[in-house]
Every structure is written in C-alpha cells, then in structure tokens.
Image 1 (spheres, rainbow, N blue to C red):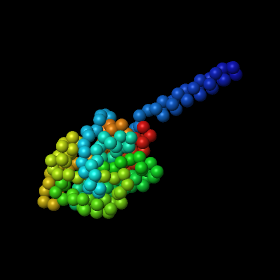
Image 2: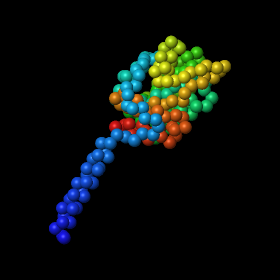
Image 3: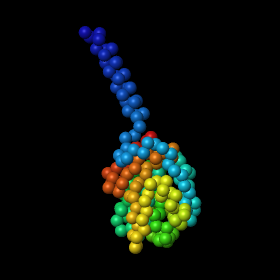
Amino acid sequence: MAHIVGPMRCALRCVWVVTLVLSACAPATLAGTDLGATAAPDFTLTDGMTGRAVTLSTQHGQVVALTFLYTNCPDVCPLTASRFRSAQTELQADAGRVTFIAVSVDPDRDTPQAVQTFSATHGLASNWFYLVGGRAQLSPVWAAYGIGVQAGSGTVTHNDAVYLIDKSGRERVLLHSEDLAADLANDLRALLRG
C-alpha cells in the first residue's frame, strides 16, 4: 500500500497545480450587467477641465470607467463622482492605470467653469476627464451608450449608467449608482488584472 501513496500524492499535486493555473487564467468575475466584451463605441469630445480633445480609443491600455453626469445634479451625479474618488483612493498605486470619464448630459450649463468647480468639489483631478460639447456633439455619444436625456426646468433626467471598459477598449460591465459602493473598485481591480 505504501508504494501507491507516492504516485497518489504526485497526482494530487498535479491536479492542484492545474486547478491553480486554470483559475489564474479564468476571466475576471465582474459584478453588474455583462456587456459581452464588445468594442466600446468611440468618440472625441472636449475636456471641460483643459479644453483639449479626448478620444476614447486613445485610452487603450488603461481601464476606463465611463459615466454621464451634469454639474447641477442634486443627487445621483454627485454620488457617482464621490464613488469615483473613493475608487481612486481604494486602488492606491493602481489608480493611475484607470481613467475616469464623465460625459455631460447638460450642454447648456456644463461650462468649463462649472466642470472645474464640480471636479474640485469632488476631489477629481488625476486621470479624470469631464467631457463637454454642444448638443450636436453629445447626442450621438448618448445614443451610442443608450443614455436617454430629458431636460426639465433646472434638472436633467438621464440614466445612471457607469460603463467599465477594459484595457483593449471592450465594454465589459454596466453598473448603476446603487452598485458603485460595493462593486466599482473590485471590478476595476479585476479588469486591471485581466
């Protein structure tokens, strides 16, 4: 019986090594709605912080968290911005490998000054773009990402979507504001490993 123990132990070690290798190669498990790893629709808009053009596809190599906000929002937008800042803090040294992008849903009031004030209020500066433009520039981006925008008197109704895009420019998962506290930093870490 003793002569079987050695080969059995070796076989168990082999199974353990194969399991470890396969789990390391397995795709990251992400919270939120799986988007099937399709190419993220590309766009170019102006960063309200710097006035420079920003093209989504030039962010390849970075993980991207993409959302849609407006600076006068009383509820969901400030919460999303705060969650972005918290994720940057949680990611520590890895935060520099994630780009956070907001696209305006209020072309009339999201001026460069409003964007700068909003960004400063929420402690967002590094790896952060708040993209603005006229309705003609923004509407196609909203449509490409399924963002419905309805302007009212002083408020804008819109989806609270946060798209996480991997380093290859593929849409991986869709989160909503209620998911961000628990899932945003974990999903970003998983995409950084992938």
